[in-house]
Amino acid sequence: MSTEDDRDPLFRYDDPIFADERLLEITHLPGPDRIVGRDEQMQRVADALNPAIFGSEPAHLFIFGKTGTGKSLISRSITQRVISEGKRDGITIKYAFIDCGEQNTEAAIVKTIAQIVNEPDRSGVTIPDRGLGTGDYYKRLWQSVDHCTDVTIIILDEIDMLEDDEVLRKLSRAGENRRISSSSIGIIGISNKIDFPDHLSERVKSSLSRDELVFPPYDANQLVDILEKRRDAFHEGVLTDDVIPLTSALAAQEHGDARKAIDILRNAGRLAKKQNDAQVTEAHVRSAKEKTEADRFSELIEGSPQQAKAILYALTLLTENSSSEEFPTKIIYNQYKQVARRLDLEPLSERRVQEILQEQNFLNVIQSEREGRGRGRGAHAKHRLLENPEIVKKVLLRDSRLSVLEDTSE
Ligand SMILES: Nc1ncnc2c1ncn2[C@@H]1O[C@H](COP(=O)(O)OP(=O)(O)O)[C@@H](O)[C@H]1O
Ligand SMILES: [Mg+2]
Image 1 (spheres, rainbow, N blue to C red):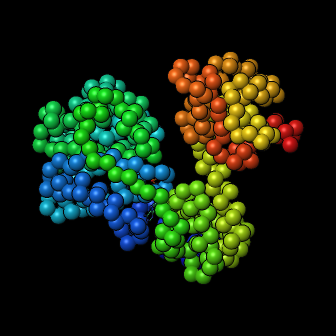
Image 2 (cartoon, rainbow, N blue to C red):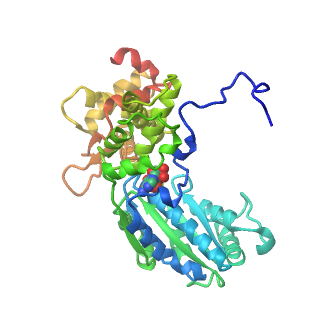
Image 3 (tube, rainbow, N blue to C red):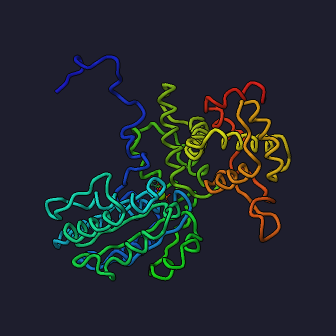
């Protein structure tokens, strides 16, 4: 055991603010007693997965709802509970949680599931990181599923990011098509986009029978309850009385987003710690809200190429300097050319800029409306920034390649 004296004085060993900061990490899976206001949804997910307890095939399920409504949490939590119930009766249930935003190709998804499920001693196969074609990865997946599990639950989070929905069809029909014989597979697909099924190919839409479930946003009171149940992330007495209500009210402003509420609360605590304050106050919460929004936005656009950022910057300038919110492609293009010149960038063609605007649209950074109807997707589109221009600008200027814009743009 180490004593106070032999500790390295370079570091701090006490945390005056947090008792257990991990409770506020987004990937933390809270126990059932900390989950609030989702009884009905939990029951529906449990109903879909229930057959797994007896080693039978679960119903496939699609879950829709805005960010931070508990879709990932409830899916993971109920899956865990099914797994422990199965264990009691000697039923082996395994689960694979796939973030389709990170892994969106058929081969990557199949490989990942196989790697999670497989135990080489039992299946007699290995799942190499590379070197196999998609078809071979499928074969080894079926082997692994059959030999290492009774039931495999596959959670496909952000399923609308899938490059190709063929994987859905193959996984959902594996039993029927006798790819697997002694086990079964259940799929939970999760999406922020309620119209997601419309985007599925006809082949998949018609072949994939499923239940559907919508998660509504939380109201401010529910957010208060959610945060109260994580209050023990902080030391006793550290949170002033107005912190949780204010955080909840701020997070309920656009839609009741529990992720935002938890992020703001954690950032408020970190801020207080950094400033060596003994308590978290309203002022910390307000600054934390700004930081949280900027962080989230920067996650969205971080990886975008410099040209895309220049286009976004052009739209931001227009939004700041005009009473209008929507701008036609042509106007954005003209502004973009000036920005590109200041950045010493070779300007892209108007057509390419049009395409990038549509891609940004896809990322939910801007919204593009087609004017008129029918043909010419884009050529007559108008585009609108979805985020506060001040925040967008701040985030864009964090990129050192864009920082030259800062001096003259004020
Ligand atoms: N009903 C709830 N009770 C407690 N915590 C919740 C609840 N809903 C969401 N959370 C928390 O809010 C954050 C975001 O939830 P998440 O499930 O990731 O939302 P979604 O997948 O819908 O975007 C997570 O940290 C989660 O633990
Ligand atoms: Mg999620």
